[in-house]
Length: 153
Ligand code: SME
Image 1 (cartoon, rainbow, N blue to C red):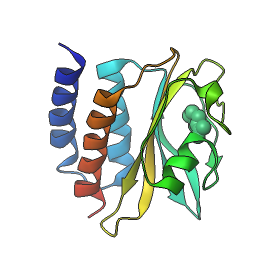
Image 2: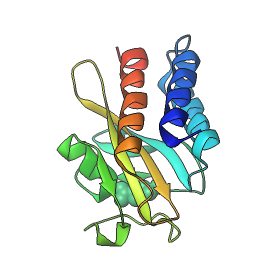
Image 3: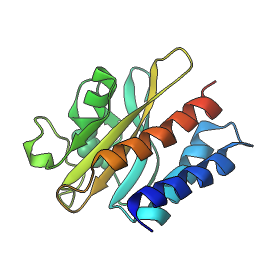
């Protein structure tokens, strides 16, 4: 299976998984698990907007920092700019927050509610440089869109 086909399968799995459950944390926990089963990234998880900052949510991987301010790091930048951040080399990203020295590249996708506010981000770290490309962006944005349609409507 190539990467594109893996994302098609992942999307079908996410769709089936989230359709009968409305709790955001429960769904994010299983979505993180599905992404990890598909790709075995270094770290896959969610930060939710809580009290005006990003707070660590459901994830798979090593322990991570709890709080990220608006506009800080890759996650806070995705929130502030309201667009996906694809980072080929985290050392080249000004203000990158290093939760782990193993992390070399990263993608962060914003998740919106029905009022088009950012309510969370999906953050994925890789221990290799340049892991994420347009296929990952498209696939993961589709996963996050499904979360918008199911748990944030
Ligand atoms: N690197 C992220 C912080 C979160 S960890 O990668 C899990 C950032 O710069 O926002």
